[in-house]
Image (cartoon, rainbow, N blue to C red; front, side):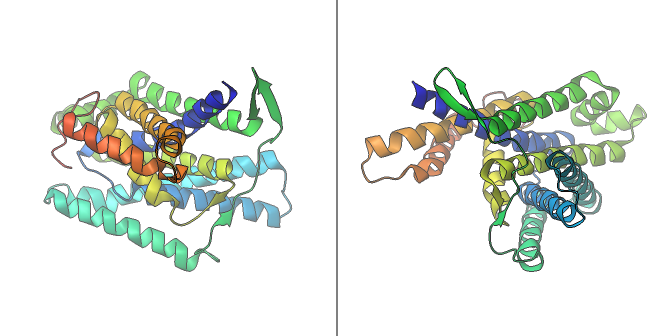
Length: 309
């Protein structure tokens, strides 16, 4: 039971990171019906921005973990939020009326540019970079399950971030404007809503949430690398499709479901097929998602037609 509980907790930890990435894809698709395929690399930029903030804090002598953590989160989210808004302003919006493949290709290429720029221009960017341990690493015992306090803090923080975005979308005037633009952009304009401002804010919000996921991933694994956004971006998109692209609840459910598939694959594959390592869990999870998409293309919670995909 202790081993099962550990698998469940690992699944929850991965699920909250995937859900945060998937919510970004859903927000972007909701307001403009586009898939921002550089979203994963935007996450990577946020993680490296947070790492840079930590290094700067160390160099100026402010090596207190709490101050470093605040600097990492604030700088990472701020840089990535501005980056997301800039992508929307100078790339996505100008291509609104172009063929969908143009936006797809442009964002794919942008992701490659950001990834290679970090690899080439960040000091020793080709190699994994150690991420500072800024949270307490002591252990707590919960019913025979040994858990690190930093993992519990990360899990709670991720859940609070998702809940905060949900409350912003459903309980504020800004959220009402975002939902209006997502429902019908032209009608929202006629009602006096600043369409472009709402789009920029939405992209900044989704990108900032991804940056937080990138920082959490660094704190969880104690390292970041220039390729981290590539896999997390694909997984986040798969989670959004799995739950139902265009629906925030579906994105959250999809994130946790994908993590559950990885955990099941990690636990079952070595037992069912001797010689198969647990690292094939990603193959198992993606295979199940492919089968599910063939059976139910609209995802678990269908809200909008995915024509732009």
